[in-house]
Image (cartoon, rainbow, N blue to C red; front, side, top):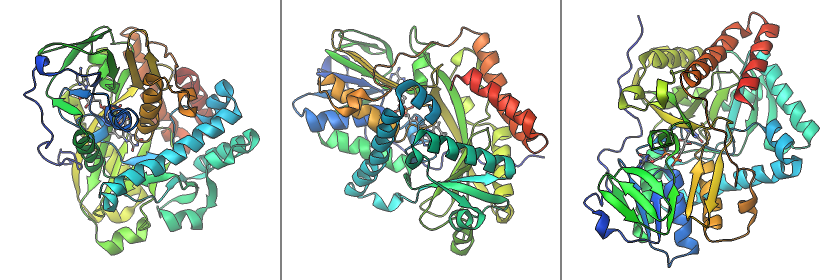
Length: 459
Ligand SMILES: Cc1cc2nc3c(=O)[nH]c(=O)nc-3n(C[C@H](O)[C@H](O)[C@H](O)COP(=O)(O)OP(=O)(O)OC[C@H]3O[C@@H](n4cnc5c(N)ncnc54)[C@H](O)[C@@H]3O)c2cc1C
């Protein structure tokens, strides 16, 4: 019998406090309209305010600030990108890859710095990221990553390979045989962060209109469920939800990531398994998992494996999946057996945006005034900050290093029509699970599946 975990998002802060929801289209006259009040939309407004304070900005949000992935994620502000290091080097060269990761590393500090300045530093800890190896095959994969980085001359983007004792001094799992430690990651409370960012943006003069749905975007404005709103510049920051907009269904696939959280653990219990500096952790399995020690000493743990829904559908009903929750609970208890004596109190999830080529993108066309940023898959907490700054540079016509990032101007391939998309994505999810299940049986067979995963995912 599977253990049913109570549904509800750990990061939920109750009713939103930022509401301009009574605004009517006629009230809105702005130089810039931003669609979506997640990290991308809010950071874009924030940096526009900093660099071009004369511009008036309105953010249109269908639900409330942080409703999307930004308010529900694993809270890893890491320097990770979903594009693999190898594919970045192949497409853009080693030097660009190195400078891109330097930008990502600096962005982690930028985020932490702002959080501290806004008075929410106690919810943030830059304790790094521990990629654990559970078993020989996983360790070999880490060694391979390390070798590749050495060959490419970019070891600094990968981190430090550690043996079992050093890895366990950060995160002590039952079957850890080593790991890769990267110092460029902060654990944060996504709900607190996104709400605070929203308040900051509003305090500096932007209007955030919640509860308004944008139905279509065109040069010169948007059509909303309350009527048209005109503006010379319109920036889309709708990530996975883009698929629900007119003529956008094949642009991005909403993939669901799910999370569970334990009750607050006694200090001696949590200190014995996760260092007080709160390093985030995962391991090297194919089916992605990720965890953090929260500010109140819980473990919040997430992973993929939920089904993709035909037609790129998104629904509140998909935000929970007790089968995936059970898988997460048993994976985490397998890592930390002491958790069998503790309750799991929360289970939630949400859609993240996967472009067909797994490559994020920032674009702005000065001729139409239209732009967007997104496609971060599961690595958006820091990438939204970098992408928003790049988008702002494009809007303001500034030629900066950010405006030359590998994903600026990148055009994504569109997804295949249904039912091919449904078959392919769900088959991939199963393949990832199979590769992990067979890993301990046959390394060669696992490598064949891994090769296939790489081919189909195109990264
Ligand atoms: C469970 C989960 C765990 C994750 N964990 C991590 C992690 O630990 N680290 C990491 O780096 N990344 C993680 N991610 C990914 C990361 O959260 C996202 O990449 C990032 O938050 C995307 O931000 P965004 O602002 O682009 O999109 P979102 O936060 O999804 O915001 C989009 C907003 O647009 C609004 N919107 C959509 N359509 C419309 C419309 N038509 N009209 C008006 N408004 C609209 C939505 O309501 C939403 O508020 C995770 C994602 C999930 C789901």
